[in-house]
Image (cartoon, rainbow, N blue to C red; front, side):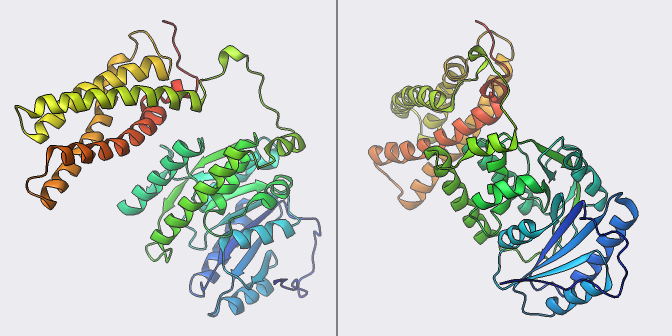
Length: 416
């Protein structure tokens, strides 16, 4: 059940027009941080935001003093609204508030206000002008200034790498708690978003991008909240399940993306067939074919070298030779790059990818020799085959999204 707080009748409303911006703050048991955050945000917007605004506190089934504090803030401050939801879920709260809002631009931010509030106007300005459809704060831009722990940094970058490699996204930071959307766009997209938790942001952005909508990114100054109560493991698992679900929906064509594109008027640019970049499916087929040949060559070299040197040395030699040949073959056949321009750079980057493959395969061999001191040659080869399959998947992701990224996106295909 969703209930809206009664408006403050003590103050005389001078302007009854709908707000230009409605900033939602989803909260669950935030009795300590809620009041200071809302007052700080209200003061900032009053002073620096040149349009009428509203601040909506979306209470996700809090069991502490959050509801009383939120209701008091809605009475105290004219711009503040209060919504109570009886079920938890950030995505559920944003869906309910945004669909009910009368504002032209809808935004949300976390209650810890980790993002510098000076980024609010740059975030929403392109939406107000009609230039963009959604806007996100990015902690991963080179112009951003971020203070947070190594673990969160690695997890964030790893998650966005997964999105880029699996769902082929182009936005840089899916989970920054600082986003905005035009209301007419939200009414089209929100009914299609299934997630009610933390994956809500990602699903919304993927649907928007695949519908041809324009996403504006703003570099932000971000100071992480050390007292954050987000369960990273459960959130990561839920996000990966969401990635798989959305990937299946995109692959089967079950989402009405063409209808959304037509309704919102963002038509694709005319591109001649000669300018269309190589498709992912064709790249995967060619990469797999080269990978099979490389694996066979690797096993032959490993067995030959193993007769004269140890397992680790044989693995290093076989992997190095086949990695260089593999990079050259994928450069020409999979990603369509010919000529000598940047060939040395691509080989150097390919060797960096080789180092990761070496770590995986060598680590597997080391683990095998810890489990059993004298494994048979067949067990060694079988272990390496499994490890190479994992390394191959990682190799394709890194080749496509790093080494040959511009070529994979159609921006660096050269004539032979």
